[in-house]
Image 1 (tube, helix red, strand yellow):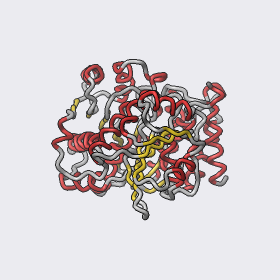
Image 2 (cartoon, one colour; image 1 turned 135 degrees about the vertical axis):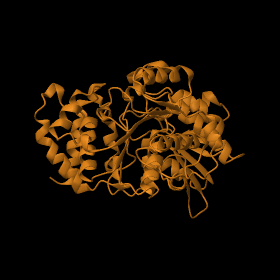
Image 3 (cartoon, one colour; image 1 turned 135 degrees about the horizontal axis):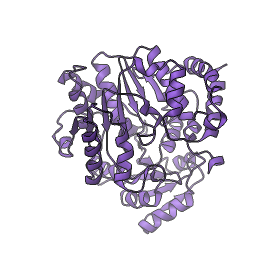
Image 4 (cartoon, helix red, strand yellow; image 1 turned 90 degrees about the vertical axis):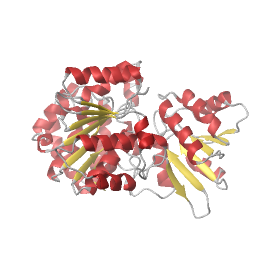
Length: 426
């Protein structure tokens, strides 16, 4: 087997859609020798900020001298971004070997119970981190928490970033229902650290923590404003993530001592592409990339733009997935733009770019809004613009990183992000 064949095999797993529950993952991990039992984890759930918080935790612990595994999703360009050790992407030949090793194990499942893409990738990651003898794994949930494949581990700490509306079709229609799914990562006696401040969400987390005798640390909104140290990721919302990461490291000091100066060093050095990432080109043009794919993310982006670039309104290039609350996102972002180009996202679930344009016009009738066939056309149309913001979907951000020559990946594998909603399953 070669790498392209391994990726093709993973593409094929999309046929099994998404199945929530832990039975398959427990069984597959057991067949693979239960690699999770050789590892220590920090498990991270939440609506927004999971990836950034994971990146901060990884950088802090790596700065402290640990060998740190990082498991996140989705990937922006290459599948290999999902599984990293000390911020080195998993090697192509290692992906190939893991897929080949798992194939015989998958034959022990009946067709109706075949593991999904995410279940297989979760076990691949566990095997890789165990083989690499990681001291710690920063472990991001895929979707929700309670029934997410990542929830087969018992971590040193459970971290819940925040609770907002997203993926309602899977997680519930109220903040309390969504919080109950995220709080499903809480384990008996294992510390919980959260920055969730919506009262109904916080009550659920408090109740679950109390029932499981899990010590709870709440990081209030004002903790972000009290941070005086430099943070390499821009935006006030990243200060909240930084305060949360700092609190988690402090809670875990009895198990993993990390001095204050190392926390500062880590937060000042963290990298996380596609999240309020500013690119300054040789012609003086500035391009900002941010995957604001739900209402809370869009509001954070608008507020960050107003604070970081006061008095400036960028040209907005926007594309979204049809199953997101894109009308509300357009309403939130419309006041921040000088002009909007709407584009289709490279996804089976792309929202119609013309409908996106209509939503921007409805929100702000005086805003010049243009629909173009692709991101390349939008970039060409505003090549003389001084300030451009590309947002709405991480898929679009990933494509932008490729087109701007900023992706380290040699292969485009963004289609693998479609694992949980193939067309054949509606």
